[in-house]
Amino acid sequence: MVKMMFKVKKVEMETDGHGIVYLRYEDARKFNINVGDRIQLSFNKKKLVGVVNLCKSAVSLNEIGVSKEVWEDGIAEKVKISLLTKPKSVKYIRKRLLGTPLKRNEIREIIFDLMENKLSSVEAAYFVASAYVQRLSFEEEEAMTRAMVDAGKTISFSKGPIVDKHCIGGVPGNRTTPIVIPIIAAAGYLFPKTSSRAITSPAGTADVMEVLCNIEYSAKDMKKIVKKVGAAMIWGGSVNLAPVDDILLKLRYPLRLDPTSFLLASILAKKKSAGSQKVLIDIPMGAKVKDPKAAKNLAHRFQYLGKRLGMEVRSVITDGFQPIGKGVGPSLEARDVITVLQGKGPKDLREKSLRLAAEIFDMVGKRNGYAFAKKILDSGKAYQKFKQIIKAQGGNPDIQAKDIEIGKYSVDVFSQVSTSYLYYDSNIISQLARLAGAPAIKGAGVELLALSGSKVKKGKKILRIITPVKDRITLIEKFLKENDPLISRNVIIETI
Image (cartoon, rainbow, N blue to C red; front, side):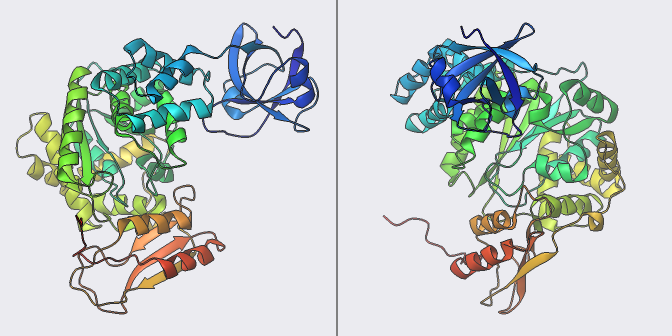
């Protein structure tokens, strides 16, 4: 045990989800501490764990710097530090990386050590990598999902059924959730929705809703909002429901990794934590899932895991080859959501939202679900419910699409050919939106001036890439010289 007290220096730096502490080389040598070691910080009967980085001048002697993940929940001005031994979970990660499936208790220990910051980002990344070396078994998937639920808080409601939906992502635009939720909630069903920020796409539901209202609430406050207005759309990282998932998301983000087992556990752990009983999963084919066989396999895995967790899960396989809606990026997608709820907006986004709402109505036993959903949307009841949700989450319920600010700099793209059916390269559209600054910069993204499937003539303006940052224009223009956002529909699928 290191007996000396160390003065704490809060470092305004957010890492990859793992708490980092900083020591001077001199102090580290004195106490035989090396880079990557885990140390325990003790103060006021409380204990925190940090992974060691060494520096020459960022902190003073007898001072310890702590990253935001360590100090954000409170820390004393001085702490006592002690060196921790390497956790058993490191051995389990190595075991799995070498191809041996893990037992329930071994998976659980990894998840809880991640939650308690006992694993370095490198060690945790190898756990993610092991899912590529060998897919998690059904037993491992269930064990990981249950451990993720148990590592955080849970919500329950006395009234049911509790419904939810999730899209596995990968499709530019596709902001159906904020449209489906008020349709379902307007019919009297509870819809506690937690969402992630974007991983592989230019925006997630949380990124879009953050344009309109506050998305950071505790589990207790989220439950109050749902009980008051019937639904909530909250960032999952704030409610502490399956919180270890956000650590795993940060690990997967740099290489846009999304192993199927982690996808399953991530989605269903949050649904289980939120008290959901009936869950609809949107699996767009052509984005993350490339063919019908893979889509059906994933749908069955969702259904199987959901059943083992006590939830009814239904999957719909949808067309994910093209962008959906007019806007790609948080603010532009928020505009689409409002216009669709007002009875206008992109027809493809409206239609898909109605189809998904119809599936949920069918799950709860409501007949003629499509007609029922359309009636709610066309009557304005869904829009009124949306305004109630926005107000309950601290936003302006009267905000209009034109009120949402977007970037003032733009690059227009013109069609180089005449075509009877416009077909976008979704991957290029996503890359353009990200080059513009989405999702971090809310007002950045891509506006589709001609929707997929349109008939266009050569020279017609089809795209506008929008950014508030002038310096990004050069990057966008360079990218466009090397990449065509349009592709032919008659593409070669496979050559054998």
